Image (cartoon, rainbow, N blue to C red):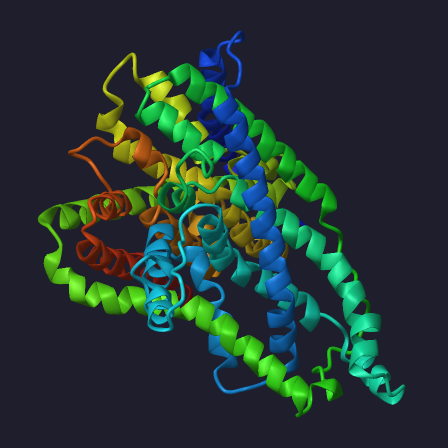
Length: 518
């Protein structure tokens, strides 16, 4: 039963939800006000729309197709280091995009490791730029996500089904067709739809590996119209188109994703008789090795190349690092002030509408929000003066949906377990949060704060719209170094950014766990 002592958070929950609505819908209204009704979409904009949908489709299909054998191999095999590998599958989610791109360039770029081998073999080099480069980067980020989701589905299959298959002496192929194919039919469409939506709004990948008339996404077209042409009307029109496409795809994804019902069991560990030695074992281990290599090699390349480039970094890198730290800390603070009251309202009142408001960040593009607030701020003052605060605010809004999903379940459990006791003791307001809620919510809150800080630290989106030559975060400064072909200095900056992003995640997560244990 929800305890009404938490109802004191209703006013703050309403205020936080109202602020989220104003920030996102206010930006949308501002954008639509500058989108001229008579203005049509140019041929190049239609090309950007087609490329956006096509690269997202290819990225989703390839990510899922490659994730199926990798997740199946991980579900069938037990080996030393398996837990570490599964944990590493979550690393690309908090990895700064620009850092991963530099790692991929080190491996697959013009002067990369792969082309060096091809040159020695007398074969023509490959290029990472264009459609295949964008898709490659998206697969790098989304293959781990698809693998984790599919692996969860495989591990949810009751062990009794595999025991029954063994008793019936089903062949490995028959077992795959009878047990695993129905599972894939349930999970794969939703996973592919989720990745498709994520790739629709990808900006940093298209900015660094795309470009050109044939490899421009809608997000990149908005940026070009804004930064190079300062055509606010065209940027606004493209923002509306992007919102319609991404929002429609998000609704379609929610409709496609099914409710999983694998079936009951006795929670026994799975014993896969079909996963014993022979060709099956060799194939599974080969798939695991290839998947691990694809995910780990770019990170190793960043560390090795960055260690040699640290001494070549200009002082502007350290200034930008300070700006990134400021943005990340402000994002964490804003997220905490928004997420806690909204989560309290959701947990105590079953306010599904508030949870839906929190999910607005998934349907709105950061560039759309940034464009809208540039339009609002521009007549009043120089938007560049607010580049860092606005970037921090938008980053917090983008992280809010994920953090609510992390915080709310634990807060609901606390409401159920300690509601009556707290109400009987008269605990309400700050004492209630201090003595009852925060100690039990601290691990989840620390994880959510670390996730927000890491994502904000590596963001290359809104800052690219607002920043001038005197203001830059570390990802933007790194991008500028890459554009100036100072790749060694950019590699050093990438290593600093990687350490800072992982560091802020570790510190916030550790602080949350320590506070809970105190």
